[in-house]
Image 1 (cartoon, rainbow, N blue to C red):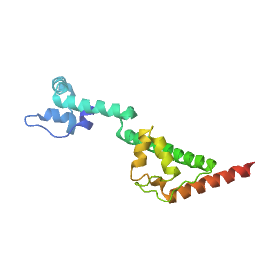
Image 2 (image 1 turned 120 degrees about the vertical axis):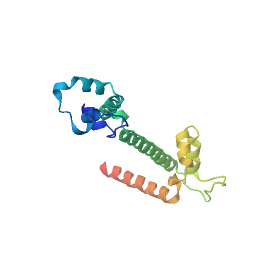
Image 3 (image 1 turned 180 degrees about the vertical axis):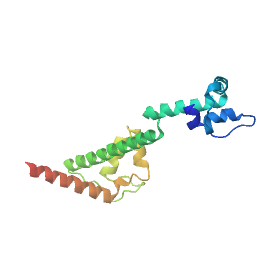
Image 4 (image 1 turned 135 degrees about the vertical axis):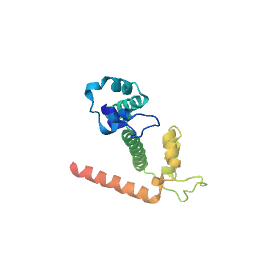
Length: 168
């Protein structure tokens, strides 16, 4: 009856006897004559719904893979990992262009330009084999190809290289 007390909607339907409500609301005190009311309530639809809700609660509380909060956390973790992978690709591309002694930018990086700069062109060329990366690069918020982001990335890479040189 624990399940019925804690997982009931608390409302009685028309024609439902108070004896059934005793297992949910007020408690049952006639234990000497309990067999008939208990059998009746045990077979009732209300008891079945309460037991079903309790079983579902126990399953969800012990199986974290079914948790909504866990699903949101997993989704967010996956999104963060995709962003990390994309930024690694971005930094590797800048390092490659730097090792080759090539400029990152062009005079005109607009959509209609025939040469949008080495960084943008290289990232678009390589993303042709990677649909997730291509989709992210085409999204509005993928503005890491902007001049400011490129300058910041070059600064970060330069600082990291200077720190590495100091260790030796």
